[in-house]
Image (tube, rainbow, N blue to C red; front, side, top):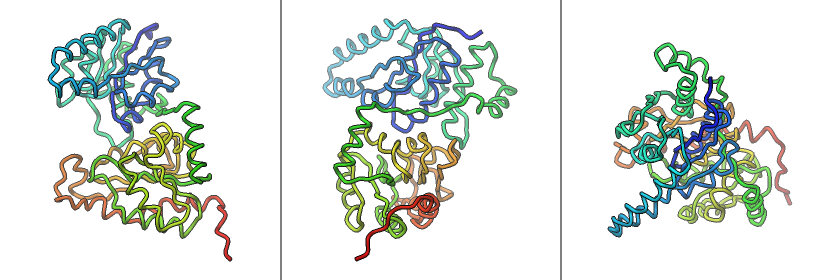
Length: 374
């Protein structure tokens, strides 16, 4: 019988895209542990991504930057005291189960010091699983959130007294849809209102297309000239506004994309992460590279064109509206080890016309007022 009244620590520290793809786990965990209290441990900058989750009862933040500062300043004694205080805080919650959904030493460490007797997580190259006592292999699958779906199934087998063997692996592959694994990212009502107010101030009307051209690694970028061409192609078909999303560091490049076409609005650096997510929730369609915001659009089941190259986190999604485009080159996906001398052909060879072709059926599905001709 399922165990009840458990206190469960769920650990997925970062980053945006991975948090989005893991966001279906809390509801799966709650089905395995009815009436449990679930606490999500996450890095401080991402707290807002999970605190409004309907299946998350509490959030504990790891102040990673503070710990890093202590290391940088060689304040090792203070670091030890800080880590010990964090351990005490975790243990005061009386967790009986810790679920480590990252597969890294740092995340397994938190499971270990939490005091939870049952510590469930992934087997990893870092051998972080030595800090756990229930371990599952990550699957090799093109499906979005495949590792988290498997972890959900593994937890289900543990709670119900069965084992994950060759036969149940087949059952997992055939029946995982029965778990109704649904990614879930929610923002507060205040942030949603703030996002709409900022958008209105900048002249962004609905319906609009949102684009996310920017991410952390250059090998994941689609050339800015391609974005310019895509915007021109969109504008040749519709006057629908285009909103450019990004962070403060992307602001200059984002503004550059607004110059040659009307009704293109840069929101890069002007809205917070929460507000960007809210704007994705209200957009009509979305185009983005391998970045967290693209996975948010898939989560919200928006018409989405995902541009992948050096990284290919998935090719199959739960949404019929997400179209994953990539050039199937021999060297791709290279992930963090490009072998092309920074040519990034996997992204350059993905043509704007191909991207536009995936977007066009959605654009033509609704009437949008054309410009007045004088």
